[in-house]
Length: 361
Image (cartoon, rainbow, N blue to C red; front, top):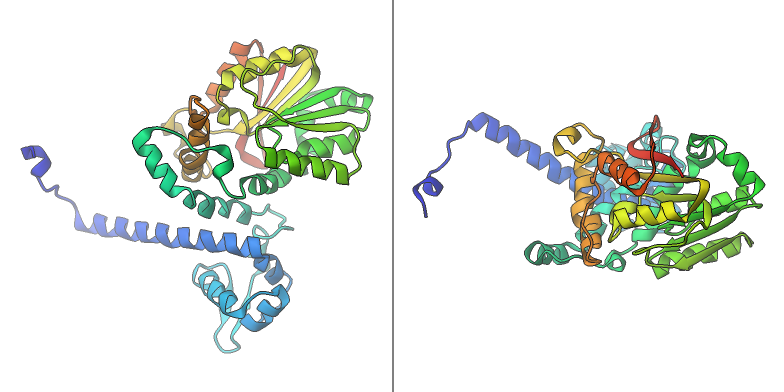
């Protein structure tokens, strides 16, 4: 061991103790995140939003769950500052101000949806540890419940804003959809955005591609349930994608950076557009430069998602492993390299986490 390595570093005790407290708060918050996921998946948060202050037995009865587990979950919610507790009446209550961002009907968006990423990524921790040694990746299908989580995310971040905010980013697009055009979604997942458009614009024709058989099965079943005959979902690896001049409008929602060859896909998408066609790309709006993301919303969360999911999924395909925080600058360069001369970058007021590029052929 070198003399430098053997030296014991000096530190300021007060600062060290303060940082130790910070780490303790991080651990505590991580535990609360896991329980928020449990509360979302069991419906307990939704149940409590509709109840007056209630005992653990009353809450468990309404939720049709085991009281002993509900009581333990409630203890986490109380000590985590999510739920209030009356020690005299032994009742628990989810304040309306808290429910406003934690339930399926939340006016501010349901942040409990994203809490599910914490236990999901933890479930692949052993595989990721091996990846640190080997540099290999993890297969897309090895992440439990991933598509159901992304479907919930899509419902509130894309579908809910699709017609009022997102599609209007491209002038004249909605009129063309009403008249009837060909549309494709690259990496469609469970197909919610495409199904919403297919229902809204019956004169247009819609195609969704995704690598996951499970996601396509869910999408196809949902389309059939809505009685749609203007939409199709196909299992397809978009590596080396090519369908020359086949579509008038192409979308990709948070999908490009996960691909084996992102640049190749963007080039293929441009080639698949007819003259005058529009490509709408949504992706994470962080910068390619770490120092620019210090104040970016949920930056640590997004880098964790990158390390635990997006990067290993890409590497498992033999890809570049760009990761979640590949950067809007990288996306813009790819669009220009593909031949889109003037991609229009948009950040929506309600959604500072994402960037929306509108590119025309």
